[in-house]
Length: 127
Image (cartoon, rainbow, N blue to C red; front, side, top):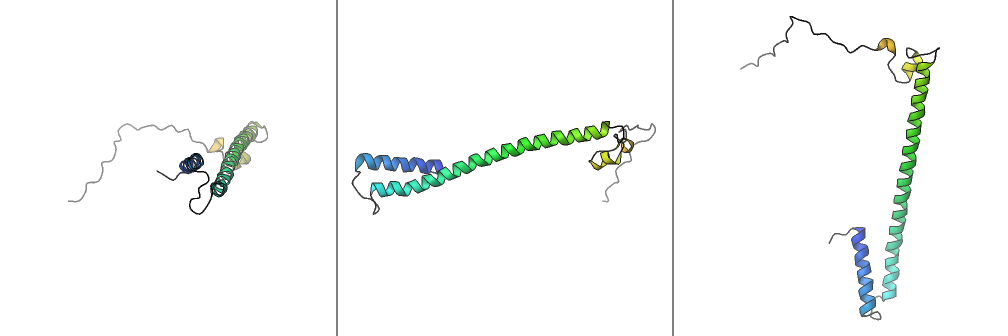
């Protein structure tokens, strides 16, 4: 059996159920059933804290992701506004400062292969 939190919880529940149903007045490991339950409550309280922290973590992550999505949307809106502004436009230093490539610095990406040129052969390996 693996010692996962769920497996440990099942083992605690099984122990309490068996102890209660078979011999609730008997002491084991120098403790009564009530003492055992009190000790096991510490583990359950710790797990509850962990579960609460997990929920808070997930909530914080969702809030952060939503805030970032809104931030990206607004930031892109600012860039679009700068791009469309008559005083600045897509060829301005402000637009470049926002991390975009100004229109004058863009290349078309078009390449033309010249006829008559062939690819250079790979150098032969010395033997």
